[in-house]
Image 1 (tube, one colour):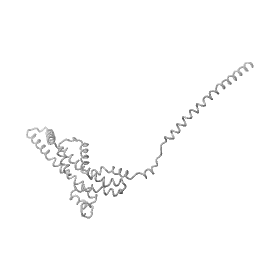
Image 2 (cartoon, one colour):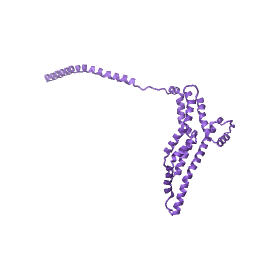
Image 3 (tube, rainbow, N blue to C red):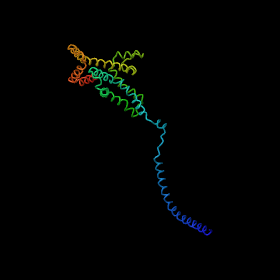
Image 4 (tube, helix red, strand yellow):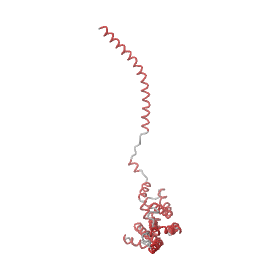
Length: 269
């Protein structure tokens, strides 16, 4: 029994020694591999360090923001109000809506079409004024020759001159009285506080006047069709079914868009 136990122990010790000798070369061989793996890790760390996001100091960036960008963003927010208040956009849009009602077409042309047409016609009319504003105010401001307040005064002068050309004297007198300002010696002495609302009212009246004139020929067609259908005894047939195609036919045959747009544009020149 002792002999068996001794043999078993000797076999176990021999096997352990053989296993240790076999494991050591493998560990020695795997050490360079660990070093090789460490190199890409270090390279990845350096690349990650290179691609780290830069932190921007908000206070410094705001402090160094050019005033021209601030003025441009402010102007963009006020652009719809400026477009409605100081341009012929209101008059054009009112006229086109009256025309659509007179023709009897409820949604043709669409609102987007009428607004786009009014916008580009407004650009065509106001383009000389915009060039004057750019030369007198924007160019010196970009060159650093004048301040923002001076640029605003120079830029508002051509726009005020345009509005005074089409604002009625009656409307100007109304707002001068309401504002309790002293009577000016000449129209250019009026403030924008008085000129802008007077110009808007004058444009609305001009648009309604032209729209009423546009309604008259189409109203005659409606009345004639209604009287004829009533006399014939076609009581159940709506007159609009007959008058609308007739009005469209008359408008197209007379080249109505050309005549209308031409008359509107000539009124500004």
